Image (cartoon, rainbow over all chains, first blue to last red; front, side):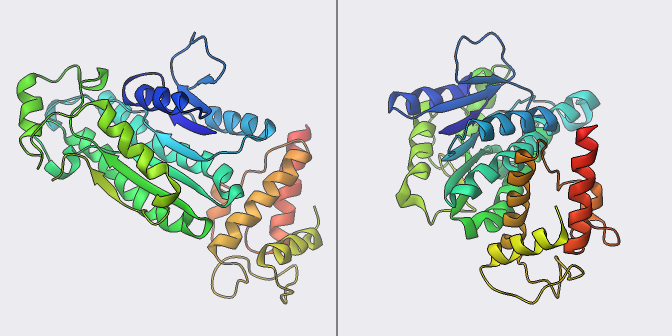
Length: 225
Length: 90
């Protein structure tokens, strides 16, 4: 079984659909309710207690976890000094604290198996450092730092922890970003082409493979920096 | 959960018949447990707690305290386990 947070929209949904098409059991966690699907749990990933309850439910059902993929995230593009305090807190809580909580709470299910994969999502903007993305970049830089250290803590259990840092992909996450801003990011990539979700799905599947057991603590900047 | 139960779990986790008593340090310099062993100990205690009808929380502020850490010794860990068991039965 694989858990995908943020699995009901955007990249998370693309990854979920692809893995399910290969016969994998994928459980999605997201804020969305009323999804008519038995393998979906509605929750707020910034709520430690609600994630813990889901973990205990998985434990009760004796689920064997193979991988945790953390796609849940939000974005808001503003100059740092014009970003409302509430927006700053929401971005840090969802992108950084929510990702840390999911790693902390669900990793024991991997530790018990003494093997597994954790994939957290960052952004190529961390490396590029674009104006107007300071808070978002701060949240994702935190995810990268956490992942590098967590990789060391889980290595004795044969669990790898990596980050995928995509360039801009036209999903709801970046619906507020203009074409000019997207082009500005893309021209900073080594491969100066916009990527689609399918490129990220393929990289995710590479990291999930047994052959990727020695790739850990890495940030894969997709498109190159 | 007695101190002896905790010691038995620790010996199973480290897979050695180590010298340990109910006052032995569980984290830090003199500990028989490395970080991997500590994680495994927490997971075994969680398994036991679920069997006992609650979920053992090893992430409390107290767990991190240098003076009153629940991981100070098998005895302190046993006391904390039993405290949580009792408070969850209320």
